[in-house]
Amino acid sequence: MTIEFLHRTAFVLLAIFVASAATNAQSSARANANTGPGWQWPASSDGITYVPVCWENPAGWQNETLSVRNTILTTWGRAAKVNFYGWAQCTTNAKGIRILIADTRSNSGIGRFLDGDRNGMELNFTFRNFSPGCQAENRRYACITSIAVHEFGHALGLMHEQDRADSTCNAEKSKSGGLLLTAYDPDSVMNYCNPRWNNDGRLSPLDIKGIQILYGARSAVPVTPPKPSVTPGRLTITDTLNTAAGQRWEHIIMQFGSNNIRRDFALNENRTTVSNSWTFNTTGTYCFKIWSNTLYTDGLYYDGYGEGCWQLEAGKSYAASVRFKTGTGKKAFDIVLTSGN
Ligand SMILES: [Zn+2]
Image 1: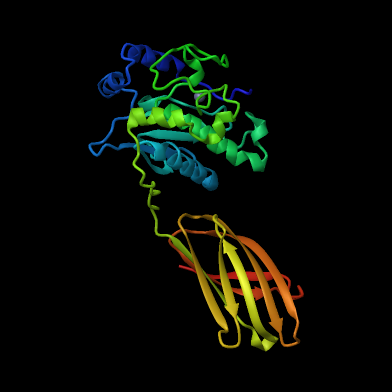
Image 2: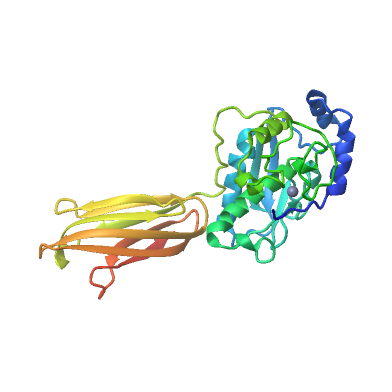
């Protein structure tokens, strides 16, 4: 298999595991983690471990950074009592995990040792130089998110599974030994010999068990994503039956936004104007598609289709109306943004 990861901090990690090897019972290891070598992020008084996360250079990577955030919150953040929060651009002296987006071999420091470390984690979103098999757009997001799960495992203090003395995997094995949380796990996201690369970004049962030993098990309550730091934006689309042009009846379906949420517009003689609204949480590029079926006074139905994208700012309200482009035989749309405030 292809080896994609690198330990910049293998030396430090080795020291950690030597230090904790004397207390390899899980209960004493946990106590040791709180008072001893300091690689484990400390829990707050409410039992939750809060870990700030920020991006060194997020500009232009909104979809990728959102995917990473959502993936981490629904894997490590859902299994264990660890709240990764923030996820905005790093300030100069930001603490926590500081992620640089770079076309390099993705990597991360280990546990709390990367707290506030500039470029403490590096994630590759383009794969031009490393893992070119991830370049294809239908592979890229799967690579981005599964690699992120692996690197955040390091950020929580986890070591490569194949480095265990009882591992049969010899891929980049560094034989560092270490604190054993579970039985050897061939399915771990941290195991280079897993036939599914990074276990497809899914935590194995033993990954979950291990991280819960370290940080406590999350209760069954679903994780609520962090609130957006700005007021959501709003888009309102209005369709009016153009009776002067001979329209008698119209049904439109429009989908909008990253989740492709669809809304219906059903117009007739008694209801000649219909508006629908969508909200969006962050500034960015948003796309729509629209399908129509319209009955005219000549008794014929016409199908229409349109699509496009806008750059929209959070906190602003936009309004637009549905119009056919002229000269397109009622087959396309022209949706014009009329205001933002
Ligand atoms: Zn690794």
